[in-house]
Image (cartoon, rainbow, N blue to C red; front, side):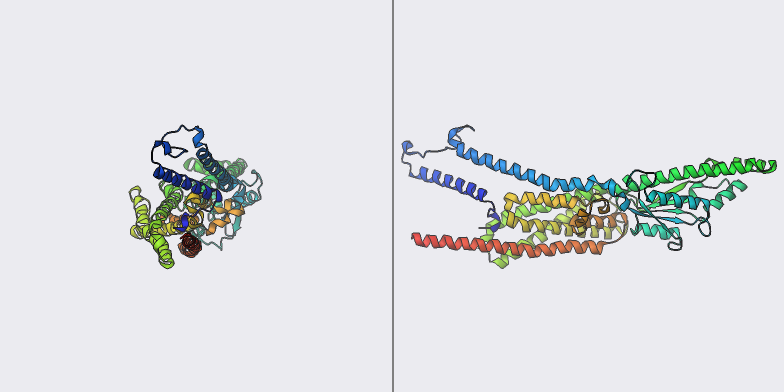
Length: 482
């Protein structure tokens, strides 16, 4: 008898035993009956209404099973659904955990008026001044020597040193002054500042917090500073000579942008979230991977029950481990192939073929990590209760994959060691060319596989020993009867 089919609940055992006894009694009754008058008493198949008193004992079992299932599901909801709700419920309160840089290159030593205004505004914002509680990023003013060029700033954002960066570009204030005096029509106000961010790292953080909060701060700061610098500029003209005013008016006519919007900014999305189909891969697709591997677990549980009673433990344990690992190969390859018609960008970091191959490898590792976990737990929980473990597995994994863990309460830091978070992070590297942590990601997934390669044989041995003891007791009872 397959150990995974041994119930762990006393009530469930009683129900199975009762039904078995009813079937045995029915068979014996019909075998012993010599005519209709000797037909067995009790429920007869296909002969009763639902509320018939003769099936009251069966109806009681029926309601008991449904009632216990509802009770278990309610408990599961409160235990696990609250984990997912909690992962999203307080994200706005943790926005200050998003770190960002401000780099001031305005003037040889940052003495430019625009640079000073931006630094002061962002430092005040970082302290929470002028905004609702926690509705701001944490800005750190970085010396321009630490990041000598804008390419270095962009690299720091891509390598996830920070979530965003704002750069006051070199001599921004003096460029405006020069453009105003010369009437430089090619002057572009957007060259004054550059805002770098990385949408591919996490599109929810970028779209919901980083971009709107930073742009709002830049717009309010620049609006106030532009008004101030215009007032100072026109005030100096009013106090100047007529000839100077005439020259200034000519220059303004040639370059009206120098007064209509003296300073502005350019937003640079270093890793755009280009394909909406990527959402299917990065979140919902992870759930599909768990479900696919769970289907294999359930099918394998049924199939191995046919042969497992006749196998030695070593053969049985090897079969339980190796067969799913082999089945995951075509399944994971098919999953990877499904993405090809939808133009997922497998060539963002590597060649298209190389990116696709790595994507397939990680899908396989994810399927093995989560599939073997269900293969281990079905030994203890049996098919009757494994669905509750599936709920827990899905929710605890998905809860840490949708928004950054830094935007969640500290409880969710467990996600750094869970399969879906690491699988999603590796896929982002392949699809969006984000920071490469695929070695770490693969290590976490392999650790889950190794853990299951220990627990599957261990749980199998425990249940097999229990089955062997039951078989010995059964044989001993037969000898006594004989």
